[in-house]
Length: 54
Image (cartoon, one colour):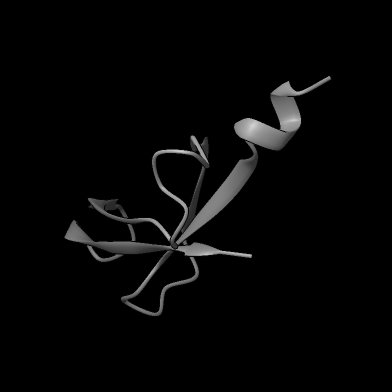
């Protein structure tokens, strides 16, 4: 179905170098570029930028 093409599952990897990841879905029509979000990294103990990994 079209569900997997429009809203694919992506991994968000921490830019702090801890290797911690979040798994989420994104809308490819609204966000065609790589996604960057500030989320909590429990290894570091603070909020850091998470970047989409392909």
